[in-house]
Amino acid sequence: MDLSLFRCGVWADDMVDFDGIICIGGEDWWYHNRGHFDFQIMRRLARDVPVLFVNSLGVRLPSAKHGGHGQVLARIRRKLGSFGRGLTHVETDFHVFSPVSVPGDLGKNALGWALAPQIKIAALRIGIRNPLLWIHCPPGADLLAAFAGAPVVLQRTDRFEAFPEGDPAVLSRQIAELKSRADLVIYCNADLLAEERGHVRRSLLVTHGVDFERFVAAGTAIVEPPADVAGIPRPRVGFIGGIDAHTFDPDLFLGVVRALPQMQFLMVGGCSLPEGWCPHANVHFLGRKPYDEVAAYMAACDALIMPWNRSDWIKGCNPIKLKEYLAVGRPVVTTDFPALTEYSDLVRVATDAPAFAAALTGTLAGAHDARPQRERVRLESWDAKAAEVLAALRGAPQTRDLAV
Image (cartoon, rainbow, N blue to C red; front, side, top):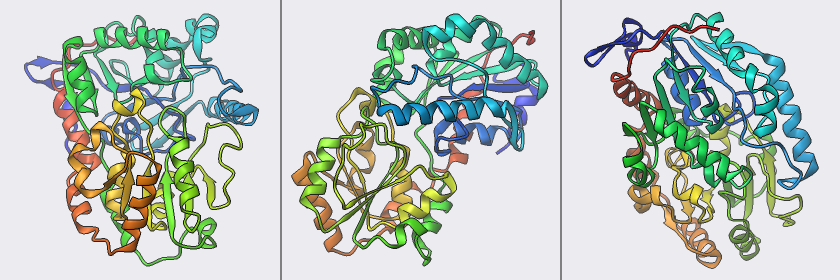
């Protein structure tokens, strides 16, 4: 992929002189799964233009109401660990920065005045003077005034206002401001794009990609499973991802687990549900895993599941793991969600726990052909998605010089 247009500044009929991207990310590079959209796209754009990835500014203060005191302390430790890393060069021209910040109105009042200067100084240190501002995390709206001359891209791949741990009024205000200011809004969900098309200047649908070769290789390799899986008997049913109230349906999942005591359920990812929510011995919580290991955990399973709830978040998302599951080549059972439409013929869809359990039993009882799954996602690489984004950026307006 040729990104030289960033440097020569030719965008459609305009001459644009910006020399890098400041991305206000929705996750923290140091402890979130690196399969996320902003990580994947920024790493590819950084092959030819400097990228400053600013770790998530957060949408709320940690609270014991969400996952207990242990998870609060873990989040605080992780955030302090990120702060301690400061500005770090990761690869090619991709740099990660963790500014000192505090989520919510408290943080805005206490440290908001210092946030933009921290980011500008970090950008200048890696040679970015005329940035394009890419925002995923809604509190990035508070930076718009400080970067008034920069073109703005809003990554609308999550419906943050449906995040139960945030303040919906504050998040809605921030998102409305970002949509009003953005020169381009990128969606991964066609329904959400259609709903908001009249609210934004320019929009683009870019569904999530997949590291196709990585996941196919894991699914076809004949190797020992990860050490913490090797002792777990088959059949193994895997869920890989965040186990969170705004996406995951615990009642449905527990019903499935109770109905299938002969199956072992592998849960790979962080969990923010209350401690002790799942007491069953055939459920194994393996915790977060580095992105490079995720495919191996999927491949160690005999079936993969997505027990989603019916939240507005799910209705507006496009789960990354769907294409990863399909590339690995294991049978998939899921609840229904809008973004599933073009892949519904490749999976089993269930609406409640009895149907979900029956679908798992049925799919594991017969032979499975992974070839149609893999063929459907073969061209859905992250390189292809980055090329779509690049083509859309060619209409970006003129920026102004970055001043601290």
